[in-house]
Image 1 (cartoon, rainbow, N blue to C red):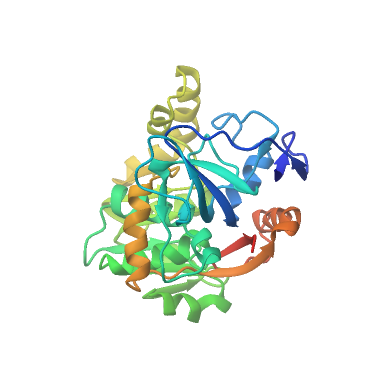
Image 2 (cartoon, rainbow, N blue to C red):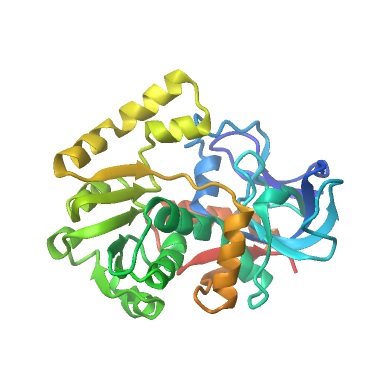
Length: 336
């Protein structure tokens, strides 16, 4: 089976012949028709998460999939061969830059019928991130005010639409060239991060979804109302994440130390900070499917690569991670 693997951290991605996936009794074998690209793929290749996601190398990369069911395990009841599905495989079972992948039934959902397989592949990781930040953690209610950073990116494009559906007033930060684009997605307040300081323009917000970290996260705390919450997906990780991960005591202490400064700042301001590393969920994807097919959410695919261009596609993430020119929404690898 053809796949694209990383053999050592910080090493290049290369094409390789790998064994066929092992299909367990609760697994679904999926023929990959499209795979979404995420900055997480580049961070895994670069070894940035090796302490919390210790993959055994060589590792097939890829965290989003859409495709066709080829076979199902003995105890699978919700899918059958021929179904068109999509998923964010569990963090221990990634590997969608391949011809086939076995996905746990609990992580899989039928893809929305109103969109293409490439569009479906763009959704799982970012849509689940937005759902878990705004619905699960943020409990966003009508009339609340939400700030979503990087509104033209993968998470941002979906989070803006979801926050508007939940009834929030939405502010976002983008470059000036994306102002009209994010307004079309539903943003009420648009801030040009290159020429405007969001901290000077916003206050009394209920929730911030931060995908940048660092100084941006610190400034985000100061636009919250007392009791407000900042959710960071770029770090730093906190002790709660360590417990969720099942990390050992030493690693939990390290995570506590890494987030201690931002948590102290939050306490002084009377707000809270939480780190979010999204988890796979077929159940939540089914709710997202309903929103897509009802027209509430629309995927944004900025570029499509052929499967043979997977190395080039991941290299484009390297440019993006260093602040280079990005695309709107997501890039996708397609296997027609």
